Length: 141
Image 1 (tube, helix red, strand yellow):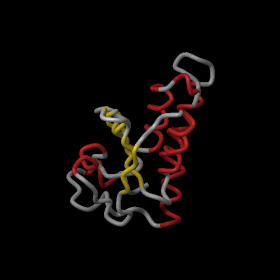
Image 2 (cartoon, helix red, strand yellow):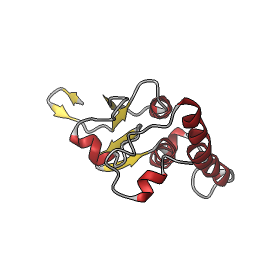
Image 3 (tube, rainbow, N blue to C red):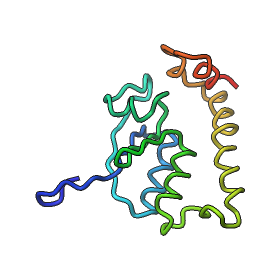
Image 4 (cartoon, rainbow, N blue to C red):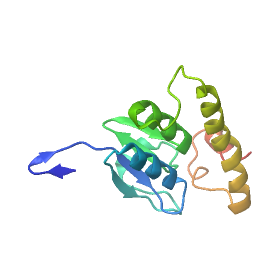
């Protein structure tokens, strides 16, 4: 972002409209954090080289926050909660409820999203050019 003649570093959110990227946008907006968005193609998840180094298995949303790179929706929400504690996006480390917060974030990613993929059709972009069994298993429940 450019303000006057100064360039201010803001987080870059790699996103796809109609995906769970909206959750990351809501969290950034609620935290009052200025950010830039880069749209990523929904079919093949192609994008600029910066996206491919931020989101290693190409899911969206992904965030580059001045070199801190985070991908997967739950991870992004946990990161934003810790990065911007004044926004009170969730319980801080050590506070009551933090365990439940983390548990439900992981449940959403590991259980709910997988079930939704089965209903809507699992994304195949992870299987393309897969380099390890772990990446292939990420697509199959």
